[in-house]
Structures are given as C-alpha cells and as structure tokens.
Length: 333
Image (cartoon, rainbow, N blue to C red; front, side):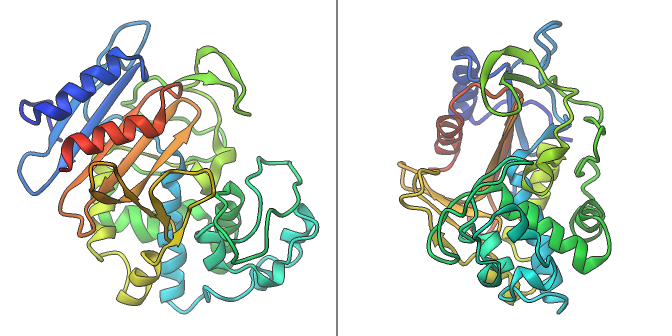
C-alpha cells in the first residue's frame, strides 16, 4: 500500500489548492510511473464531522469509469466468439429496446454502437421512456442506457450476473480485492471515506448531505462499481498495456469516435468504454472518469500505461472537469 510521501510538489500544491477551494471535502491522488513506492497524496478530510483525513486503501464509488470494466467484459466475450460486436441487440434482447424507447431502430443498434455511445438512444434514468436522439451510428451521445443494455447482453450471453463476469474476467485475474459491483442494498466496504452530495438522485440541487449509505445500485453497468486508487491503477495499467484483451479486441477498444458537438468532455474521442483526452497543456491521456452522487473519480495514463494517475473526491459539488484537468496537467508535462 503506498504511503503519503514527499515529492511531486506541483501535484501536492494542486491537491492543497483544490481542497482549499472547496472542490470537495477531501481529495486523493495516486501516481505510478515505474518508480517504487507509488506516490500517494491527499488533502481535505474523509469525514466532515470528525475531521478524519483521507488515507490510502479507501473504497469509493467510481461512477462512469465502470464503463471501462463493462467494455472489457463485452470485448472478452467477443474474443471468445460468444457475441459479435456488429450483430443487432435484438439477438440477445428481443423487444427490450423497443419497449422502453418507442421508435428506436433496434435492428440497427449493435454492441459496438452501445459501447461507443453512437446507438442513438437517449441518456435516461430508470423508469423513463424517451424518444431516440438520432439514428444508430450517426453521432456520439453519452448515455447510461447504452451500458445498462450492454450489461444485460453480458448476462444473456454468459448466463452469469454482470458482477460475476467482472470478477471472473477482470477483478479476479488482476487481484483487485477492493473492486466490485455492489448488489442492491450492498454498501461501501471498509475502509472508506464518507461520501457527500449537494444533489438528490435526479441531479437536483439540494443542501449538502451524507450519501455514504445510499443505494446507488440503479447505476449498475453505467456507473455502479466501487474500487480503490491502487486497484484502478492495476486495471488501467493492464488495460492500456494490452494484458487483458487479445490484439484484435484491444484494437477495437481503442478505436475512437469524435465527441465534438455533443456537449461532453472537451478534447475527447470515445472508444469502447475508454476515451482519450487532449489537455490544453498538449498532453493526450487515456482512461476515463466517473461522476456519481457523492463521488468523483478519475483514472488516466499515457497510451502504454507506463505513467498513470488515479484519484477521488468524496463529494460532487466541485467542477469535475476542471479538477481533472488541474491534476493531470500538474503531473503529465
């Protein structure tokens, strides 16, 4: 387990400034670049009531970085010949898309289009019925629906739960003991920081409150996982380094589409569960981030996975994109 240590003064200053600017109650960042031990830094607090500091090894909700795990599982099934990325979703989910999104052309929506967010399906919360936002394959529209459908396909193909497939194909082989997809009612394992939110589950602004024990299993394949900074490093390094997927599926994962005009993260191109981001400093990194009630997470590195940075804010009221940019530009130059 890495320890809080000296060094990386630029990153240390950014952490301290972000905490002082109330980007969240506390923030942690861990860097791995081949040197031992890994560098770990923290600022702010894990618990607003007790003032307990944030520490290495904490479990936290990773939000949309869940999609990188789900994409890896889908591509693993494709490598095994158990699904085709360009077959219609109706192969495994007959009638499902049409039931919830009247007018959707389900016969043209494929696992590939779900994973790169070009399915034409809207970003909807559970129970909502929304019309399609475009034709399949035409443009990028970031949508939780895409990955929840992908998770359903995983379960239909494998005969296992998505949580079991993530553990069998990713967490287990890599020894990610702090990484899991919680079931309904399953909370954060110890140790963990308290999670705080300024929003309710629909995204409406409310007073800041403790959501550590909230049941966020509705996010499921789109954003429901829990992990640690060290586990995210191990996963991201293996993924970027080509150690989780055969060459063909690795190439598929990192083949990207433009996100321009989608009012999403600036400077990005989206693959199959991961994305590249070009920062104003001139560096381009790969990986992803996650925003969910009470937690903001980021995990990115160079294309080879030789230098990675992961971290978490245990609150959701700071500017997520600005926080990520500040941290990555401080350490990647």
